[in-house]
Amino acid sequence: MRHGKKYRAAAEKISKDKVYSLEEAVKLMKENKIAKFDESVEVHIKTNVDTKKGDQQVRGTVVLPHGTGKTKRVAVITSTSADEAKAAGADIVGGEEMIETFAKKIDFDVLVATPEMMPKLAKVAKVLGPKGLMPNPKTETVTTKIKEAVEALKKGRAAFKNDDSANIHQAVGKLSFDDAKLIENIKAFIEAVEKVKPAAFKGKLMANMTICSTMGRGMKISL
Figure 1 (spheres, helix red, strand yellow):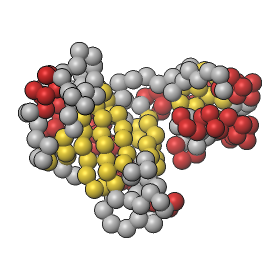
Figure 2 (cartoon, rainbow, N blue to C red; figure 1 turned 180 degrees about the vertical axis):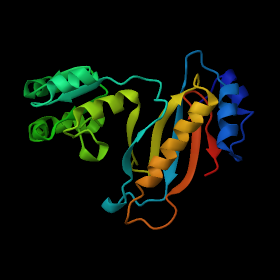
Figure 3 (cartoon, one colour; figure 1 turned 90 degrees about the vertical axis):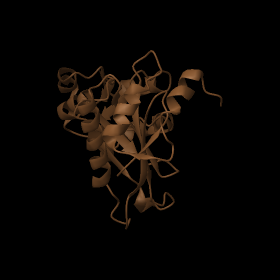
C-alpha cells in the first residue's frame, strides 16, 4: 500500500527500530498528527502465549480513567432489572422480545444481560458471537449488578482479549487528550493485561508493545 505525502513525511521522523519511552511516543504521535479528524490512540501488545492452548487465553476488562473518547451505546436485556438499567443510562432496554430483533438490526456497541436471559440468547449466539457482542461473565457483561455494569461501560470500561496471533488491541483515547491523561489510560491498560496473565502460562507475558494513532505510524514502547 502506498501512503500519502503527509504520512511519509511524518513517518520519517519516527524510527521503526527505536524503542521509545511512553512519554516520548505520546509526544511524537501528537507532533506528527496527519488527519483532520480527532484520531484514536491505539495500543497493540504482542504476547508470548500459545493461542492453541485453551488455558493460555488472555482476557479481561479495564476501566480507563479518562475513557476512550467515544461514548458506547449500551443495550441491556433483562427480565428483572429494566428500571435499574434505564436509570443507569442504558440506551436500549428490553426483555426476551428484543432477541428477535438482533438477527435484523444491531444498533449498540455492547450488550449486558442478567443471568436468566443467557439461555434465551443462545438462539442468536451465531449473530452476536462473531461481532464480539455475546455477553460473558469474564467481561462482566453477564451480571445481576446492572447499575454498576452500565455506569462502568459509560465511563470507559472496555473488554479485551488476545486474537489468534496472540496480539491484544485496544483503543485508549483520542489525540486531543492531554498527554498525562493518555499516559494514565495506557498504564491502566497495561496493568489490566498483566493482572489477567493466565495461571498456566510461565514466563514474561508481553513480548513487545506498540502505540499509534489511527492514521499514524506505530512506535515500539519500552515495557
